[in-house]
Amino acid sequence: MLRCGKFLLPLERPLIMGIVNLTPDSFSGDGLGADSERAVEHARRQIAAGADLIDLGAESSRPGAIPTSLDEEMERLLPVLEALADCPVPISVDTYKPEVMRAALAHGASMINDIFALRRPGALDAVAASDCAVCLMHMQGEPLTMQGHPGYGNIIQEVRAFLSERAAAAMAAGIGRDRLALDPGFGFGKTPEHNLALLSRLGETASEGLPILAGMSRKSMLGAVTGRPVGERLGASVAVALIAAERGARILRVHDVAETRDALSVWQAVGQKTEDSSRR
Ligand code: 8Y7
Image: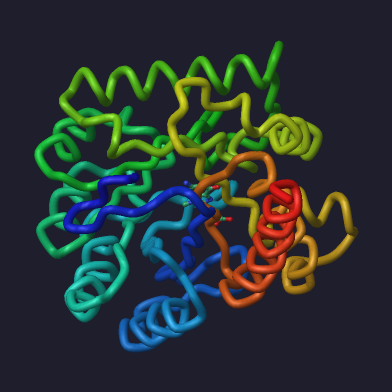
């Protein structure tokens, strides 16, 4: 189970986290900008399509992105959180700023999704002071420069060591292990080859039995394999979501909720059959 504010999420089957992007410059073309009504609509559609949780982001973390000001991030985020207060699924907020974390949690967010894995001063305390869940993500470098020259000795070992150090830091700060999810951070300071290596050995990236969150939806690693632009990566996105599920991911962060839901339903139905017939 993942403790997520007032929610307790079962982790027996992979959960779908639907992306709701409040930035005007999203790489995937889904940015809703300052239009908070459209953002709320989009979140409700993601839930109707089968999202188990929503990830709201108001600062672009795409490669080369210029950081957003604190005020601007708050202005984009808080009205949407308020409008979604009665939402039947947990709302995660994608931020690395402790001030935004505190405000988001006070406005009903149940999870913090931090691409800096609570490394910013004050971030551990902001999350520890609540009962929200938190996703700790691996990133080499910073968004502005991370795709310059990504390099690793042994990427699996380095990602796993980083994530277990951050999980230990979180627990030492008083965040219970039932509130943690770990994420290898696809595309964050990684070449396409690095990303494929991480996916192929996804289960080894989180050693302590903590749930793995994976986000590859529409990312350039899929463009590298298929040669397709960002608007034509649905098939590849669904495929990698299924591969991640099969390799142990417990939360899949996706733009295309309905399609991912269908793929997972088929996969689960086959798994169920295998279990049924092996009992006979
Ligand atoms: C991820 C993420 C992004 C990811 C987690 C995009 C905010 C780029 N990617 N958070 N955020 N994991 N936990 O393509 O892979 O959506 S932003």
